Image (cartoon, rainbow, N blue to C red; front, top):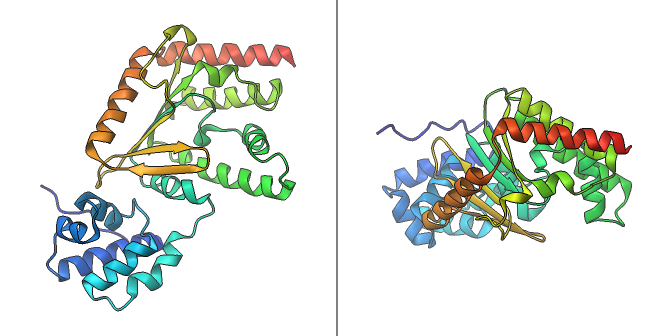
Length: 277
């Protein structure tokens, strides 16, 4: 079995904390499971902290300092590692995306953030915050577009998305905005940067009627499932929960159109919006 991936502590504050946590844990002759038990978390959670796929929250930092006798090191450095330009409920998931080797997402209502064009993103944020100042909408939109630059890497992460047909039919920002948004997705699919499917209305009942599904896999850490609601979000690593989400995603993909038929439908709907202008 290969050893743990060597971390680059200079790459980010989170990587720095992860590398130091691994060093101090091994120095104390503790396994990940043993340290996790003292924190009332799983050993895989400790592995995710060390790999940088999870944020070290202040309450964990203080307890780790106590267990490992690190004289407040993790408490002092935790704040820099937890700063984010994203809302608190999504910050950990957004940062995990940057480390994922594979991202799978089922979107029932909106185009996923990584695939949104600028005008579409602005219309979504304006709907969320109808009284916000324009500068605030600018800031939110800029952060989302910067996040989408993750897909400028030609090969990683592998992004596999299933869009519900409702995503194509729900008019966000008007016909022109929708035409642009769908053509942007089509461009990514035709450029072989993403795997794209559409779950059509006539598929009927399906495995995820309750909401979206998002899974992130990593080369050196367990797969995470991300669940969200209105203003809340949580990364889950419980194996049974992750397995259930993986099965749900597989069932959705089995009910969806092929990538070729999905692309044809998206381009057809984009053309409809163009005519509507």
